[in-house]
Amino acid sequence: MAETRDKAELLERLAERADLSDEERAVLREAAARFRGPVAAPSSAPARSRPSRSERRARKSNPGAVPATDTALADLDAILWSDGAARGNPGPAGAGAVVKNGAGEVLAECSAYLGHTTNNVAEYKAVLLGLERALELGIRRIEVRADSELLIKQLRGEYRVRHEALKPLYEAAQRLLARFEKKKLVHVRREQNGDADRLANLGIDSR
Image 1 (cartoon, rainbow, N blue to C red):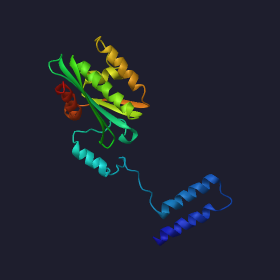
Image 2 (image 1 turned 180 degrees about the horizontal axis):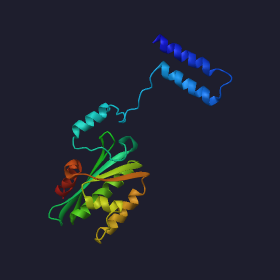
Image 3 (image 1 turned 120 degrees about the vertical axis):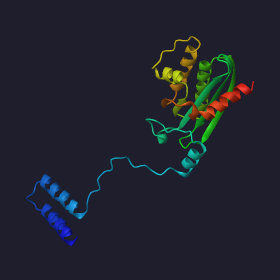
Image 4 (image 1 turned 30 degrees about the vertical axis):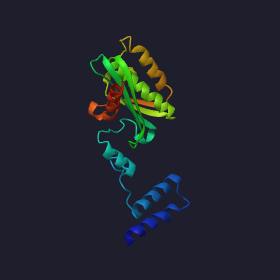
């Protein structure tokens, strides 16, 4: 260790010579720093911080939750889970929506009876219900999660809206989404959307 420190000090002294260029001086100082201590190699995987107590509690109480995909939860004000249900399709229908923060804590729950309609109409009315509630709460950045692939891909612009009954609902959803500073639309599996599904069925049962 002493020999290593001596070499580092020698390199530092050499770097102070007046006849060196700035580039030569920088190289000598870099070499001295390497003798003083090894530079830790960067990890190939990003460091993962330990989840907070509230995050651990939320994950335990909501094991079906999935992380945000391309956007970190810390960058989101809220996550909207929405679901529509129609018994008979068409039939008695309900809409359900849950607004949560990034730790999985519930900020709002919404449920509504929609009358006699189709499942796709119910899916749209559920996301409208949730988006309106999120805006009322003052949320500016949101990730929308639903188990309707049709709904998500139409709102992303990947599928065309062909059914006449869905076109005004699609336009209303796009107007609401445009009011957020940041938004993301994510398709999730049905089993991950249990809270919104429960509220949609509660809406049907409340008729």
